[in-house]
Image (cartoon, rainbow over all chains, first blue to last red):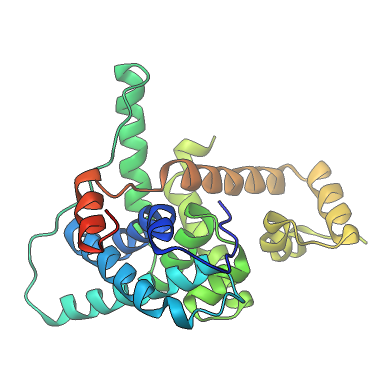
Length: 172
Length: 75
């Protein structure tokens, strides 16, 4: 999904557009549902506060994900320094379609995908989630992570190769 | 322009982004037409991208979304 840019973004609309994406990024980095929800809230508090200084000359998706990414990284650093609370895993929202067998297979695939993404190093994971899960362009990912496009491409090569190994049985 | 397997691997990020020049793209396609190993690699990497985009996204639970909406005074 390419979110494009907007010159007069409205906060409520930005929330509806990007809340799930920021949650996905935060959860994939932190792997704790409650902390990821806190990141979403804090991200949009900052988005609202800083909207006046957003110049509208770059992709707004990259700007929002950049705020979310920094929040998520700050949480993981704090968590390393503090005693751990029990991790609360994300509840996947299953849609009531398909047979029971299809649901079981989809659940297995989702678990394997979760494990495979979690096995990536954090910088590689962030690039993969933004590019291949959230569908940002390579340029937007570079802006969100504050790295060069060539660095994004290098991380994506490593991510996709690792994911390919982890998910081999689902790819043939 | 011809590419070998190693050169094709180096072009894959731009290949997936659709950012190759016409010449590079033609060379990549020509190589894939004759190299089964590279074709399998590209198919599997495409599969990774499809799995990630189709199944990697999470949804903020509705009750949490409502709570955050209220806290941000969007309601």
